[in-house]
Length: 425
Image (cartoon, rainbow, N blue to C red; front, side, top):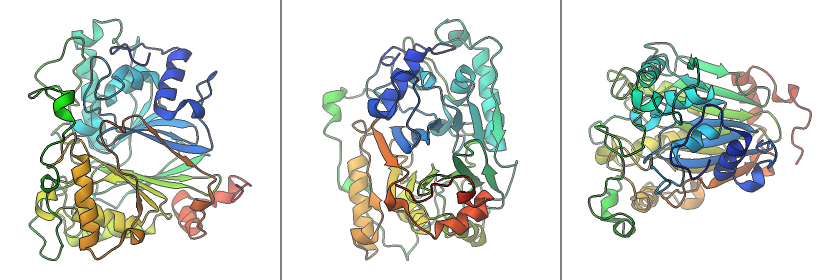
């Protein structure tokens, strides 16, 4: 039902599923008869902020569920929430429980049966959100948006309540035998005092005062996101109960390791805390030892091929790109994809080119050249929404023998025990 106005059904038919998957993952990567996505690829499709539709060896997931603007009809985002329901994801991974990450999670889970993976605190918030939506006549009184009969949600707790960041490293088996998923709690962004040792890049506003595209797209005063006080005509108002609540600032880091081919690895996280001080907004009394513990984990993970991580932090005004750069430098990926580009700190919709200018400036201020830094695949809204980023898991570029001991350590077995085609193109 791509292109429809929030039309959601309890059981999207096969045509809806195929259309949604082709919209997000590309016609050439989706079987036109079954809707199955290519099993020999990892495909990422940016849906705004830190939200990605992901196909990992043919398994369809949503990494976060927030959409910057839930259009009544496709507009700035070229899709609507009904398309996310029609996508029929197997799982919904929630990086943390703030509204700009967990919005829509309970709704999509109830409509599709997809399993949620989140912290214990965020799971509590999402169960409360489900109960609120279940009792909302604006949702349940409309046959197009009402939950299926006896709907429920299944929220799998990845870390326990109140756990210390970096002390619970969990192996999740829901993609086995195709992929191992490693998850742990880390630090949410937080403002800390100016670090005099960090060569700060200037605020993005130095580069672009306004986005010259927007006046032509939206008249002055047009809100780029609906307010929480009401709904637009025909629009569902879904705001997670975790926003600002106990599940809000407690983030998870997810690492994916493919079993086949070259053991492609992919990291995803939607916040980056002050590793130097060991502080986060959900861990306000941390110490440098907490940050060092997380840094050590990041460095010990199987060598990262693609890092899809936040570039915005609450610490940006004080210390510019310091905290996200600490994550990038610890992971040392081949490719970096910036996320959290449409909400958070000083970042707003449409200033992505300005943020990129500051990012390049920051690399230079560190005394580095671009060939000493990961290849960067910058994203610009709204042009890059729902455009598939495709990686062939058998590409020789991902070969790295140093991955194997770390894979065995974190994933519990030698990856070659699962398949006999290691290294074949």
